[in-house]
Image 1 (cartoon, rainbow, N blue to C red):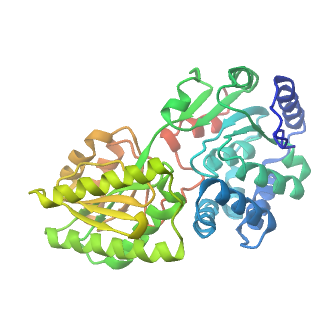
Image 2 (image 1 turned 135 degrees about the vertical axis):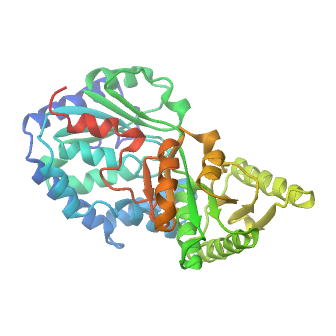
Length: 409
């Protein structure tokens, strides 16, 4: 049941009834293998481009967000890529089912964010109360509907509700009645939640990328893959790269890569039309561009590459440390000398980094990996794969995965 299907305000009695139904569902705890099969069948349906639930959901998300349906299609495909039947079955084989009810507070910035944690919890035997945002209220109810169609028993383990952040009474009830809470969002949205061993908060994080031009590789292909990482989900999630570092022997190579990236973003703007920008977002991107333009006039050797109508922006800045962008396909490119130089450029965001794409020859890869681990990066992948982390991704350091896998609390 999707407890927030009505536009009428959700009250504490209705929320309490939803939690009570979840308690009843875990009393009939299905085998993890059955849960895995039901989830696999759900995701198989959602991978089909013409699946009605998917088409309806994408149309609604596009209308509410201003994102193009083409961009959403590509992004949802990347989101679902890790959840193959084989992977879900393997996950099920590793869990001893434990009946409990978890509360999931999902963010507004990216449809489907939190799916890794939700899937892991369901396979482990937990029922899930999913609270969606008023700004992204489509994806999880639509997936829950498909799951109930495929397997009503497994579907009964998932309820979706929606209420405003200001409803402290409902937030408090959810925290008190659930056995654990998983909360995703920016740091300010998580600040009102109380801490404790049963709260797993995933706050504001950013990601980056490193491409080494020191070894043999198809650099144009790496630029295309990097552009895809930048474009998917309009660069709004914690797995979207904001800054791409290039290990190169000279500045000309870095400039070449920036131009390849710009060309790739330009092609993507035609295939995956950019979002309709809000006034504040457009102003933020304009500030990035004007700053780069003025620095280019001076002695900073900064170059600006820009798409029409703010479709994409690449700033080539030789001296920049890791720079967080406004998103919406806005990225900085900078050269580095070696792993020590990378560590220096990441120092300001150490502990706030989530993922990094890495393309480097074998002899240099280990040193770069050490730097990324020291900066707190939890997911390293090839360029083009940043939006498809594996199910066992230790998001936020892995505390939630450890909790799910623990045999004793």
